[in-house]
Length: 240
Ligand SMILES: Nc1ncnc2c1ncn2[C@@H]1O[C@H](COP(=O)(O)OP(=O)(O)OP(=O)(O)O)[C@@H](O)[C@H]1O
Ligand SMILES: C=C(C)CCOP(=O)(O)O
Image (cartoon, rainbow, N blue to C red; front, side, top):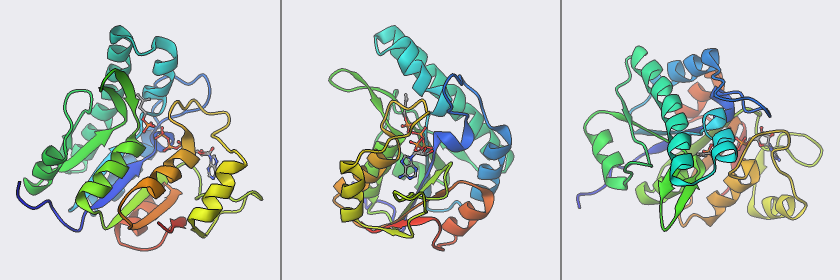
């Protein structure tokens, strides 16, 4: 296999940024926010891989339909509808989006080839056929790709300003011991439809990675995305 692309940045656009994930919401797109995300990406997308969450196009489906073959089919089709919207808006901003659907096929090679061929690879949280049918979070995809490409930096754009401490303040720099303390005391995405574990699991994944790189958790608005893509510090810096 030829050498993988270097200097790669991975950006996870949280499902909470582009969809309404509040309890009871079902396939509710945040159209304006999606356009802002795509506008920011369109201004600097070379060497970038985008992964988006499923938001209310996936999480409620898992609860409602389950993971039988029929359920998984319905869950995937929900994720596909969001991917289609995301990639269509990207192309409206002249970005050659290359949608990759983990349910169908997903490999490091295909992501690499897409980038080397001038596309922006866009992956998403999905259902996959492993030993059994299971949910694959976009956060897991990020960790996997970050290791494979030895990514330069990772950004998690979400609906909060960063990672909050116990007093509700945004943490400037988060290290492993503070995260472990937070996990020990519990802390989940309360009031949200989320079957993949929310913020703390996202962070835990980063620490499980065998590759250290710069990582940030920040609110996914246009200004912050621009800053992140330009290499500035934004939100909470996670020290891996
Ligand atoms: N300590 C914390 N700091 C910040 N957010 C937290 C914390 N604990 C829990 N959360 C919750 O985590 C949420 C973000 O995680 P979530 O998994 O919903 O993000 P996402 O990546 O946008 O979603 P998706 O999995 O759909 O892509 C926040 O909206 C907040 O409610
Ligand atoms: C719920 C499904 C199908 C995928 C979850 O992906 P995530 O929103 O990135 O956690």
